[in-house]
Structures are given as C-alpha cells and as structure tokens.
Image (tube, rainbow, N blue to C red; front, side):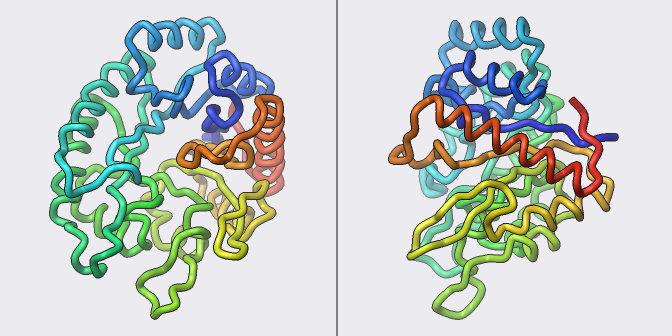
Amino acid sequence: MPMYMTGFADEAARDIDGQIRATKTLGWTRIESRNIDGQNIHDLPEADFEAVCDKLEAADIRINCFGSAIANWAKDVRKPFDADLEQTKRAIPRMQRLGTKLIRIMSYPPLHDRPLNDQMEDVRVARLRELTRRFLDAGIQPVHENCMNYGGLGAHFTLRLLEAVPGLKLVFDTGNPVFTFDRTQPVPYPYQSAWDFYRQVREHVVYVHIKDGHMADGKAVFTFCGEGVAEVPRICADLVKRGYDGGISIEPHLAAVAHDQSVKSSEEIMFANYVEYGRRMEKMLVKAGAVLAK
C-alpha cells in the first residue's frame, strides 16, 4: 500500500477554513489535527467541534490523527492524572465521530533535577497502560512521540515503554532528537542522532512526523525538510525500502510553533511555508521511490 501525506495544519492557519484550504492546495485529503483557533481539538466547545466536523465533511477532508495534549511536555507526572483522563474521555467520542484511528500521546516531561534511574517510571508506565487500554478498547491506536518527554530521552527509554505498555506503538519525529540532549552520554551532553534513534525503534513505528533543523548558539533553528541534520532523506529512503505504508505528517515549525508562542508569522507566510514544505516533502519521498496516496 502507498504512503499518505498529512500534516499539522495549524501551522498553516489558525482556523479550520485555512487549514482545509492549505490541505486542498497540496492536493491532500488528510489533516493531523492539533489546535483549531488556539484550542486542541479535544478541548473545543461542543458547538465549535460540530462546526468543524461539518466543514471537514463538506470539504471531503478527514482527520487521520489527533495530535493530543495527553501526557505531553506541558504536564507533570507528579500531579494528578485527572486532566489526562478527562481529555481522553473527550477525545474518544470525537475520534469515533470523525472516524480517526490514531492519537498522539506522550509520557510526561523528564524530571531534570533527578537522575535517569529516578524518573518515576512506574507511575508513567501505569498511566500509559491505562490510557492505552482505554483507547484500544474504543478501537483507537495510541502512538507515543519521542518529544520533550521520558520516552524522548533516547531510544532505550522508548523501548522500555513499549515493553511495559502492551499495545502502544510509535510515531517517530525526525526532528526532535536534533534538539534533545543525549543524557546517557557524559557531560557535556551531546545532542541525539535522529538516525540512531530511528534505527533502534523503526520496527515499532506506525506513523512519522517530519521536522528538520539544527542547533545554533544553543538555540533550535528549524529548516525545510532535508536542509537540517535530522537525516530526513536517509530516514525516508529507509522507510520506502522497508515497505512503510503509514502516514507522513509534516510539522514545519518554520512560521508557527505550538509550544512557543514567541514564534509568530503573518497568516500568508504561515500558509506559504506550510504548502512549500509539503511540496518539498512529496518530492523527497518520490525521489526515494515512494508511491503516495492522495
């Protein structure tokens, strides 16, 4: 089966109309939905969510994945589980309403004041087991992202989660290792290798996020796909070689960053960057021998 293209369309436009327009401009039929008018899709008021559903249906665009905030980098594993359970409770019927089968979750940010062997792993695992159970029971596949979280500390930590949480699978983000210290190495910590991380977890990857960039003077610099050090072409070539048939979801971070409100651009620049990024990504995949579904 061919791969399919999708993306975090909130990086093209804040509202659903603009997100749909960007998706159609690219000739795509899918969106990975995260924020609409500044709110995550599982947190939208019911009337607003229904309006979004109507517009998606009219445009013949589907949501292939919920980019949820469940157990994400903004949470704290030391605080009550209630918020994540509430978001899960809201997400499930909305995903069923939209026919969406994937939901991105995380494993809470690391505790930087504690060593790697004291990260409350038992609590993280217990919570992810409960979340995974609830989603799988509803016919939904949770996928863990290697982001600013426990699993993102390195491939070893991701693999520990997979071993401990039956049914959990992975979304691999090409760019996140580039901006994440490898704390398993001696001080001063080097940054992770995207290729090494991917190579160790690729057997469990059912979905892929595309970011690229490099570090400069201690700051993250995001680039178009293939222009940074995330080895996007190499990873994509390996995906094609291995017969990967899941989604390729662009998350450019060129004009908008969901977790950094200081990064702002005009709507025209956001839209143009998103569309250009999508076109470049398609060309890269086709060059690697991929067959892309529309």
